[in-house]
Amino acid sequence: MNDLEFQPRQVARKSLGNLWKAIFIAATLLGVLSLATLLYTIVDETFGLVALEFTTPPEELALVPNKAIEDHTSVELAAVVRQALEDGVGTLTPGIVSNYETLQAKPLEQWPKADILDMIYTDILEIEVQETFGLVESLFQKDRITIAVAEEYPDATLIFRSWMSGDFLTGDQSSLVLNAGIRSAIFGTLWTIIIAILFAFPIGVGAAIYLQEYAGDTRLNRFIQTNIYNLAGVPSIIYGMLGLALFVRALEPLTSGEMFGGVDPVTANGRTILSAGLTLGILILPVIIINAQEAFKAIPNSLRYSAYGVGATRWQMIWHHLLPASFDRVLTGTVFAVSRAIGETAPVVVIGASTFLTLDPTGPFSKFTVLPMQIYTWTARPEAGFKNAAGAAILILLILLVALNLSAILYRNHLRKTKEASS
Image (cartoon, rainbow, N blue to C red; front, side):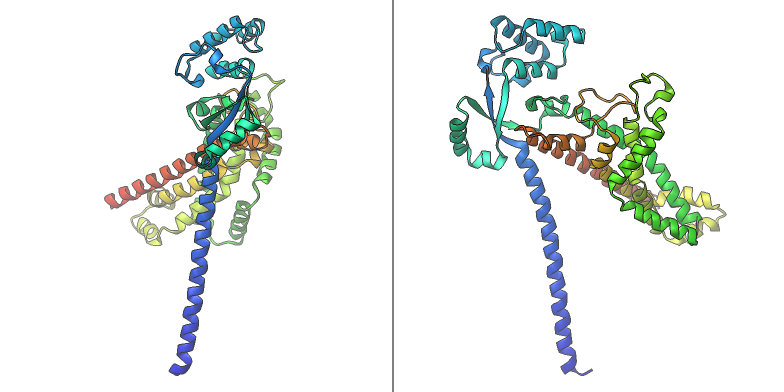
């Protein structure tokens, strides 16, 4: 080929390469822009101005001066309630308080702070969220918002609110958005994920060891491998239906705790944390198997042969050489699989996660809710403020995911440094 034929083709190849490079850069920028838009939307919903309307102004309550209502202790809030009853403020009556105290079998001063706040907001202040505004709008268009709120809600008070706060993290769920919290949802999420890991990790790694080191390249093994890859792509709601049929119904005596006693057989059912955890465990099992196999494949055969050369059996080679050498990769793949499970909503909806739960889970046989379920419930509610609470819950979920992935990366790097130092 002479130069007259070569040079045009070289120019065409370079042009094609530059075109694909531009496409790849555009795809990367589009992905970054999408993530930035997501974070912007979440943060914008989590902070901002709120138009509140009080039937009873807070100034009429016997609050501690220069102290926000949420910052009062339970004893101080109880004193506020009793003083409001004496002054006839709000719609709360002494009989109602007496009935509540009898129902909870303890005086008002010993109630959870969230319950007393609920009573103050609902029955004394009779507070209502009229409208909420995003962070950017609140910072740069405050004057316009103030004028609009004054015209549309003359009796409303405009305050700047962070929907993500300490009370939000530690509070119970509530029908009043200003007092709603996600403590039970966080505990439910942690319970289900721990059960999923305890179930899926040993089974997944064990299956990967067998398929990679023992099964060999047989027709049956190739069939199993193909189906594992297919299972990794099955929609999560299918796993929810499997969990409903297997764990909630077929294994109800086990998952409800009835088999072990200590629960009422009349009210016991399989819609518990244990069922949700096992369902999520099955959901991430194919992913763990695939990641573990890839981790084992990355280990050079020279390590295996060197172990055999000094007289080690296959199991000794796996236990003392293969697993330590690949554990950092196995751990990283497992954490990524768990990250997927944390954000799943469809399986837990089918299993029967609660949409409103004020009791913290105390064991694997407890009723439960999880953060994705709480977010889904709040975004479906029409009342003003719940979408902002959902934004705060999403931010907490993202922080939890980042912390989990960061911990896995740091631990993986620690393991690699340890191996390098010992080699």
